[in-house]
Figure 1 (spheres, rainbow, N blue to C red):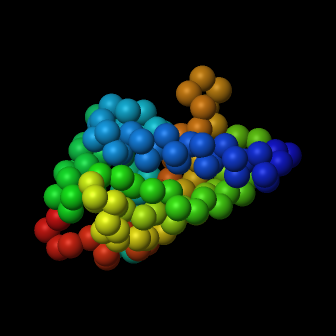
Figure 2: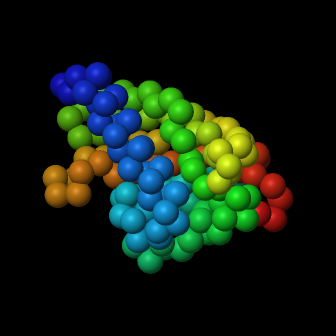
Figure 3: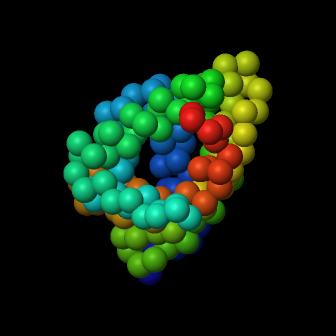
Length: 140
């Protein structure tokens, strides 16, 4: 069984890279952090993005929304992670979204299931987005 503190450190490092990819508004870099298929679960419905093209479209939509609200720096302020065997982990991340002047735009928590790919490393397979959709401005 994988050690919880090791998974915690790996998850924190992963989400720091995730943050940097979003801050760069780099669709390819962000999309590479997600597994395929990628499942995004919200209170409204689950959505499965079955291939890289679908994941890229999902990422483009997120980046457009973040650009609209003035996001410059998504901060993974707290990361909690638990191993689920050797190659799966659950993570909870408290995100602080900051503008270019470092003002806080909003904060929310998101849950993730990560899968370790032998070649690609950790990737998000499932996003459980329970706060973000209701906190983003309508039409964003």
